[in-house]
Amino acid sequence: MDIEYILPDKIENRSFEIIENELGNRKIPDDIKPIVMRAIHTTADFDYYENMFFSENVVEKALKTLKNGAVIVTDTNMTKAGINRKYLEKWDCEVRCFMADADVAERAKINGTTRAVASVDKASELKKPVIYAVGNAPTALLRLCEHIENKTFVPSVVIGVPVGFVNVVQSKELIIKSGIPCIVARGRKGGSNVAAAICNALLYMCGK
Image 1 (cartoon, rainbow, N blue to C red):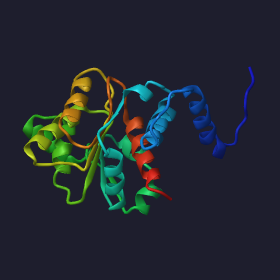
Image 2: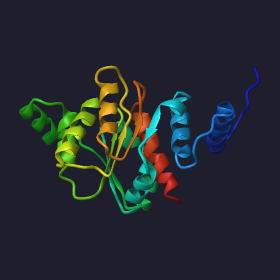
Image 3: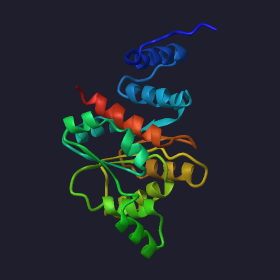
């Protein structure tokens, strides 16, 4: 077996070359290509070529929101940790995760909900534009749908890529049907790493 030794700063470029090669004749529209490619790169799963849904003009909307200084709210600290701080600072953005906050735990206990639901409610109190990135908790998407329907909290963009089996597919389809600008990995696949990858792709697309 031939091993190709590549220096660390060249590995990502080589990875994208391999992905392009393995995609073959499968073409990705230019406006969404960096996002789909980074999802594939993060997971080594070419199913993301098929399963990613982009609402109309969502990338344009997301880039405009980021360039105006947004809060990216995540449903896991893993996603939060994976988002590029340098690019957040460049565009005067911040990333927040409320899942471990004491007031969120208390709110969830009082209301008999999950922390993911309580986190969405806390995010609704933010004063800056919000991009909500969900990589783990379908209940967060379900709560977002309730807020959107009631017009009590309407994020600028929702990234819906929770992974799993219970309410995952259903919650993704509901966020698509809500009409909110969204990027969704349809089906069961997703995860915190995919949510972070999508956020980073958007930040990189804003420019250096």
